[in-house]
Image (cartoon, rainbow, N blue to C red; front, side):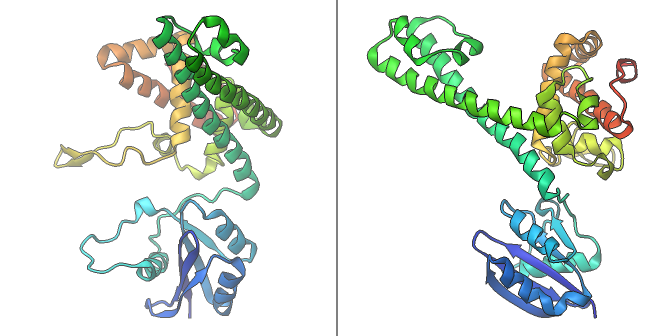
Length: 338
């Protein structure tokens, strides 16, 4: 007898199901999110358990790591790729867990990549940096808009980053306006310090890696973008071809065709948003500092528009980065823009 397990994970509890080759349920129970309880529930089926499926939710780390540590074969299910029949009259957590086990038994379970815990922690450091940078940008814009609204002048982001709270009184603004902008400036200074700490930590962890050294040879890709691309990609071998990587980076079009006619668009957001952002940023820098990239961009822009041209350049860089990481070779501008 071979067993298959599906776990529908929630914030405080999980529904654990174990079924056999005919989808007959041998065990089904809602358990609290305690690793010891879930491992104990699976223990009677360990010897013949083909695998355990956990749906990829925001809080899967502890469960997947714990089950792998206990010796189970764990599969991380991709919920966006396994939509159930819309005509079902009844669906609940138990049926969802049974469906995960059913897909595993049929061998058609769409899965996601399980990043090793140590590597995942470094990747999440880079994501935390991105979160803080977005927050800082919001405060920078608040100061710039406030200054323009009160004075009609402009203040660049670099000037605002270096601005001291005490210096605001020199602009002759109202007391309440100065008080408001001082709150933004104080937060910016705190975020600057935390971002610097995260960047220093990331440099310690990734600077000597082979992928990092080849990525920074590409136009538009500096230390920050190289770090993000490398950590979000993971092992390049998990992508069967360059097209798969470009699709994962959201650098390809999405459309549904029937009889040669377009019938709509697919899920254009399917992929990694951090990689998508990184390659768009790289494209914007590359067209400013690399003549070959600028010529490619201008040619595409003349045929389409600025947005499409930037996306096309990002696609070029994504394909180049795939080959660079796979072959361990630095950027070749002739090969990329031939």
